[in-house]
Length: 64
Image 1 (cartoon, rainbow, N blue to C red):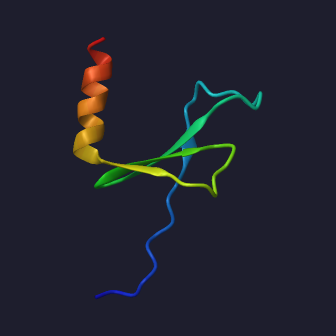
Image 2: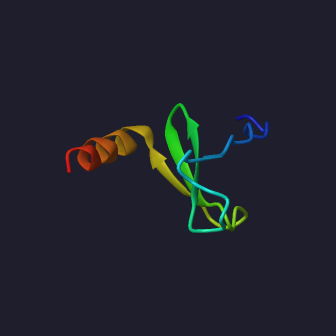
């Protein structure tokens, strides 16, 4: 069992996000999951979605 700290996530916002202080999400991508958080409250809870489920969501959203 490893006691090493996990590598920090690299967060980014959409290129469509402005700096007006509106509602924004940030995303961090890892090999097995997509992490999503509120850019205005980064210390609060984040949502972690398995990569396969994220891919299914993107396919579904793209079909609409």
